Length: 89
Image (tube, rainbow, N blue to C red; front, side, top):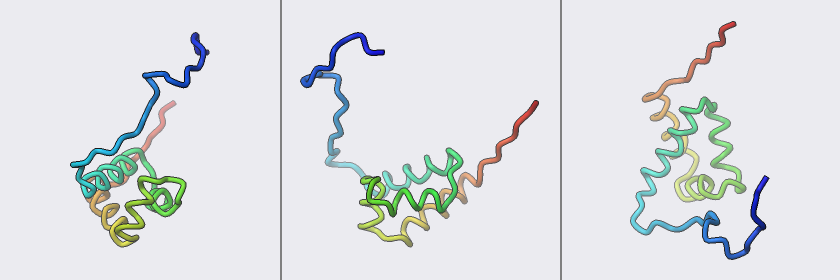
């Protein structure tokens, strides 16, 4: 539970900012790689790009298209494969 009251002018509030010299190709590649490495399936990841609720990934999908996203997925899978999980008793 928070110990202080909500302050509309809180300087610690999370705020997204635009990075002017960012590399959109690298950003898209890193996003896909992160999802692949967490164990998500290809169709599940693709839904993050096709659904407008996810503005960052959806912007990539709108500007580059589905084939581009699928190519990113294929490259990430070639590099990282599919995670294998095991449970032990």
